[in-house]
Length: 482
Figure 1 (spheres, rainbow, N blue to C red):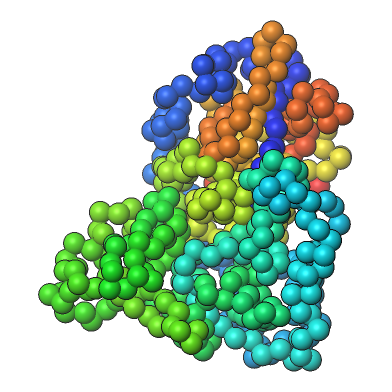
Figure 2 (cartoon, rainbow, N blue to C red; figure 1 turned 60 degrees about the vertical axis):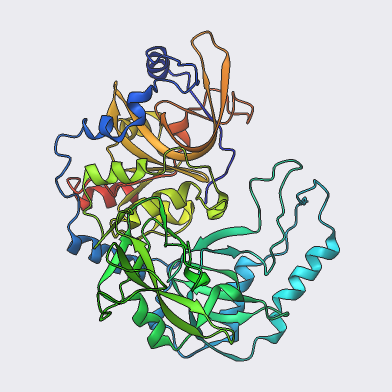
């Protein structure tokens, strides 16, 4: 998950000063960016072979299998036993639902009372976990928040900063399978394991069913993959639970088979729409699968898109200008949610949060340590290619390519700042998916973090190489182990 107010500044090294001096500053304030650079065609045009596959479907499937087997942040729901010991369930919950030690504020800027935090901890109800907890299963029926605590209370680190809700962790999309391992004291929240997260979800967002039904739904064929930033099902008053339902990029939804072509669906002829099979929650909490229509002119595909430079850049640009949404809030996404949703539309699975993505043992990457000097880091930055993911603490950027002697990125970012040629600092509140120059950068705002003159690349924690199979895996892993 990214830090919302990450501040980036142009560095002061000779190379970076030359790079900064060559970039025009347009009225909007983002260096070097005109309307041309806000089109995917510009960056696709820089690719020598834009339609050459980066990874085959078999390569992607193998990488996903490694991720599930090797990365402890991922959850293989099919491999879960029928019950879990209390210690395991407690460990998952305590890792997520730690009582905050720092001051928090509500939407009105008032301090959250200690009694409120105590009540939330009590609602976690660790004392009710049996010695062996039976694992239940369900399907997510709507875009649903994953929370640190079983509450909708929004809390913030600073008065007036109401964008980053510290209890918001992530979100899951309709059709996502979850394992249910605990219930809040009031019974209204479920602690769930999704394939890549463990947190609290409102009970009303989950329809329960046997394990084989839940996992069978996720594997059904044929299906549609959402390839737009998001799409919505057709409005229907006959079945409100699936009316105008939001489906985000990368969501896989099975198609209903065997329906006579002339038979209306929810009062509407289906010839101009795909007939989806979507989960809904019945009054008793159990699962029902119902038909819903998705217009054929929406941005979906019959399978995951091929992982090529053209598709990678095109998919990323579908989010350009989308409002930043910490933990997938605001019906949007944050920096790590952005890159993982883009890659997910091509079938590539990733951990949810930046720290986990950056060091996942299943993803080819290079980790940086104090032993990596400025020159080594600069060399790595100048070798970045489209699709590479660059990490600093709490933030990730996707590389679009090299242009004008430096790498450029698209990322979901709060604000940037840079040093102008006259030495003053410009601050730009982007708060959206944006295209910016990457090289060179300072970590911190105008040195106010006490690291004046420290370049951005000196704070890189990792580069994940998802877009460059031509780099030998052995070399990548050797760099990762430095």
